[in-house]
Length: 96
Image (cartoon, rainbow, N blue to C red; front, side, top):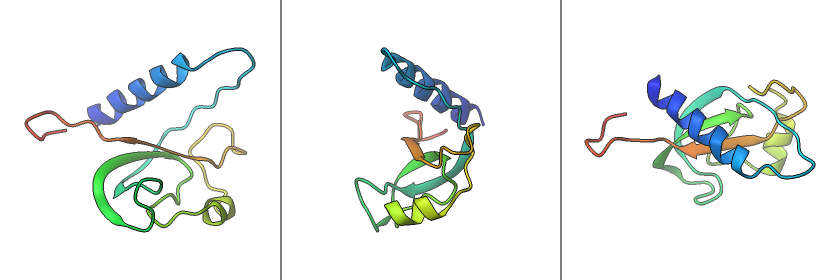
């Protein structure tokens, strides 16, 4: 659980660094963990472990249509059905 909190803090810090001018904020809590990366390896299950936030259906086979059809989100703004993910942080010893 601590690793997820650290990932979330790093994610929020990175998102805050990009803040400029007109913008909006939305908070999305943890949804699930998978070894998928729908952008780098679309359709390929397995690989680097990622923590997912927002759209709860996100996986290796996600498409614009599949994400648009799933209206379930972990974001505080229920109209934000976007998919967000970050690599899971690991210690050099391999532990989380």
